[in-house]
Image (cartoon, rainbow, N blue to C red; front, side, top):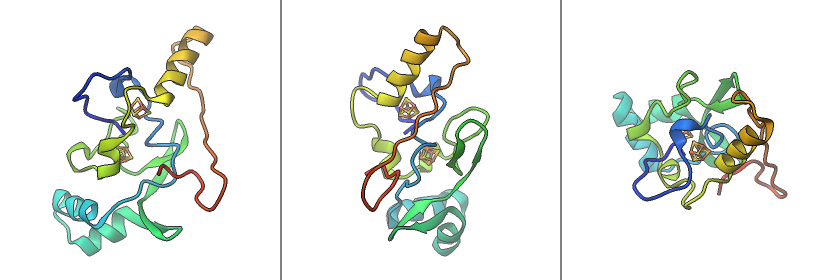
Length: 138
Ligand code: SF4
Ligand code: SF4
């Protein structure tokens, strides 16, 4: 998610409205992630846990808030720049995403930009998983 581009990739997060920070209801955080957030905001781990995370189907995930493009998105997504507002303190799962040379959301996005021939087009992607964990990332 909003990855640094350490290796050659076929997507560009700086040109993407941040599907990955928006479409998943679950962005799981570990104790280490919460400790990093606490350091970043100079608050206690308890406060960071309460303020920035919530319980979702048995695990800790980042809170979400209203988003003008997708309805909801991660609380840390900058709604203006569509970049991560806590880039250096973001959770591990965000650092690793999408863990491939291609990002399927970016491919769909670029495809529709070309297909519709409209630079303002925004394909509203929604993923639904069967089973217990809906809209999860992993
Ligand atoms: S959806 Fe893909 S291209 Fe867009 S910000 Fe996320 S990882 Fe980057
Ligand atoms: S922490 Fe940053 S990279 Fe991770 S989902 Fe939220 S806005 Fe996206």
